[in-house]
Length: 129
Image 1 (tube, rainbow, N blue to C red):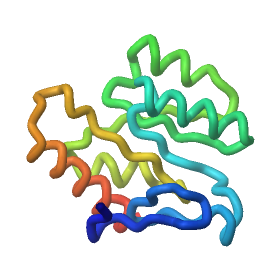
Image 2: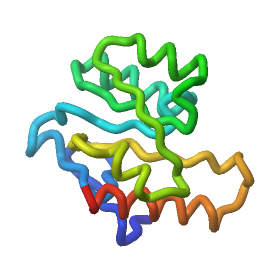
Image 3: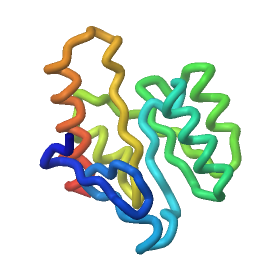
Image 4: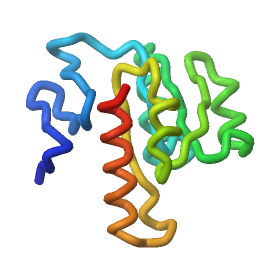
């Protein structure tokens, strides 16, 4: 179901959190933040966006990791550090973006309450920017 922090876009069939916009109505975003960019889901989204000519801000906990360094070497990709438990770091990471792909790492700690708090932090950060 759709929570108050989310809405579904029937035009582009994307679940958009907080600041997202329908691509059919508003045109494609010019810069999208991607959480989990060094992982499987976020990495696939990053690659698909870059293939469409969209600039991506790859958000990671550890920009010094080998995966993050590899992303930093790609055209149209900027790597930024943020922590899902720190709303202010997310605000800084989302700054200048006009869309976001948000995913948390449930497997780290396997705590659904912590995961929901992280999504709340993301939504609040997106609203703030």
